Length: 249
Image 1 (cartoon, one colour):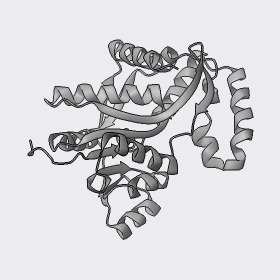
Image 2 (cartoon, rainbow, N blue to C red; image 1 turned 60 degrees about the vertical axis):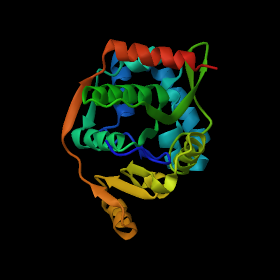
Image 3 (cartoon, rainbow, N blue to C red; image 1 turned 90 degrees about the vertical axis):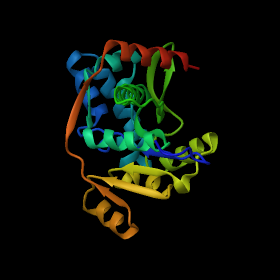
Image 4 (spheres, rainbow, N blue to C red; image 1 turned 180 degrees about the vertical axis):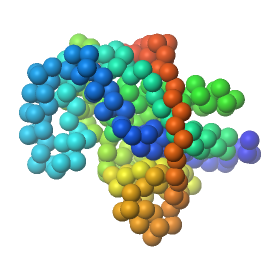
């Protein structure tokens, strides 16, 4: 363990494609919900209407900000759809390195918050098994709920692109993190704003365009390939459910 730091620093991680291999966890969840019959034709209709509303903001806004396929579902249905979470083994090792060097860990993800919290808790369990204890903070896309049921509408903004930068700045101000001495990890050009927010940026398994940006900016480039699956135990899902219920307005 390194000597205690005089100022607080953090390591910010995107989730999908960065710590967790593709396909995205939200896509995996959608497929499971569809197979179970939880997503019906009505959900597709809600999604289509929201897509029309968001289209003037661009295709990225439709892809990232349209969660209306979850209309009418409850948090427990989302969690039950996920049986396992796979991490990049190299990513877990990198998180562990940061924790052992006194960094706080923050997820900054566009996925819906209940799913992101489940990933965070799974990572906390793995870190504890490795002899380190650290709460993983989460900034993710929040969904509107009415009487415990998701409307499909996003509260505020979907957490992607420039919104990730603002989210990191808000977290840093609240937690008194020095962003210049902090690290961030992402895997797509949509993550560029979050990478530019810190003094130490890293790209994971980048495509050609992001790799070119990383080379020009002298950012770290990582290639992570070894996957490790973790069972999404019922106790973990119950913890997330209780936490999300406790944060309902």
